[in-house]
Length: 295
Image 1 (cartoon, rainbow, N blue to C red):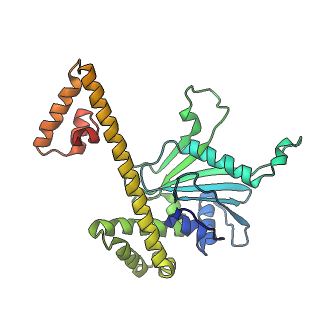
Image 2 (image 1 turned 90 degrees about the vertical axis):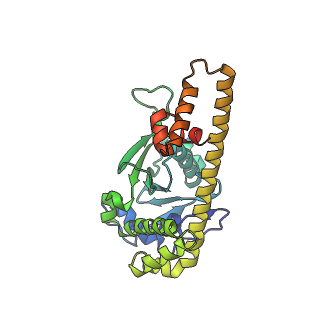
């Protein structure tokens, strides 16, 4: 696929399925696995690229026009965002503005447009179902019998341990998930050299060998960027939770904790911490958030 000037960082997922010299073959393998087709290299495939739509400075989406369809893929290595249908809606609107002639909307005859399909590949460490469907209508304040506007997102858990069917029919995706699994294992064992060790292991085990041999330095840079981005997001969320906690405590003090239940929970949590229980277990026992317990 064609290269573009970037003002933001790509993920390994985006490079492998959308930017690398072999990205078309990898994307076609994934498309065929999703649709049960056998499209080959002669298939016309047009990459579609929008800047700073899903994320401000980091890119983990791949969009292509193929076989009369717009296929939009997103990878999540953290918790799946329940607002993905809304974000996909905004993305799709901008894509149609880009690929369609503005005058065509005023034609009297029906103007056919590419069929959109939306996929999220969950590759995180949280326990997540193999297949989940997110709908735009789930976010509506009132639920109509027949939504006038709907957008459906298919979420697939592609962690290798989950045994998703698509991993058995798409070799590039299977090898990619094995690579991410190796990265996680090695970074936990050796944070400083984890990326490099994961790349070496995968090359030795014939996992993305050609890709990693050819682009090991670029892959290292992309992994570092992904890690830094995830850390930044985690820090921001922790700060937001801390602010919310302090505001909640202040409000509780202002109201005098009239029923005493919140203060009782805090006291219980403090006692359980002193007994050596984990924060996660204390949160389950008291109903407090982990941030409240840490505070």
